[in-house]
Length: 152
Image (tube, rainbow, N blue to C red; front, side):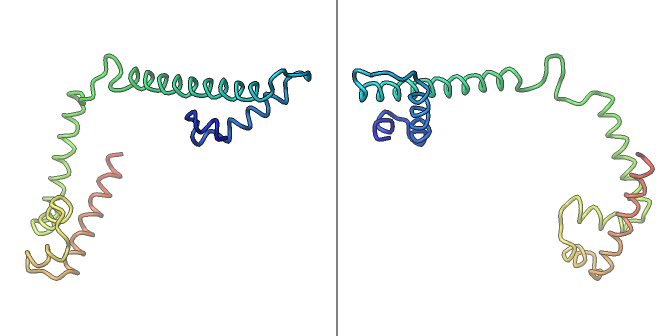
């Protein structure tokens, strides 16, 4: 393990020792002229194999990411004109729905959901109670849920 760590195996040293053991165990029995040299050479070659494998896997992943990143050929990330028109019509429909609920409900919904103001500050701004703001939001949410159900 010290040999492998000194050669840069790091956390893989234990796994490499196991691989060395398996490799030596699978070898045909017979005398080895220099067993210690054989052991170190086997460990060194396995470490080199692992290093090359990791390096090739990284290169393969980079190449795949580079080849598959971004938009597919002939396809734009921008929405089509039809989708833009459809989205604009849908937004106009939702705004008309909100306006149809009354100016107070529309103002509360816009201030809370679009501007991100807390319900308490919306209530204070409009001079209403918190329960009134919550009630108006429930009306808006119910109307939007009904609209969404009709549109899908």
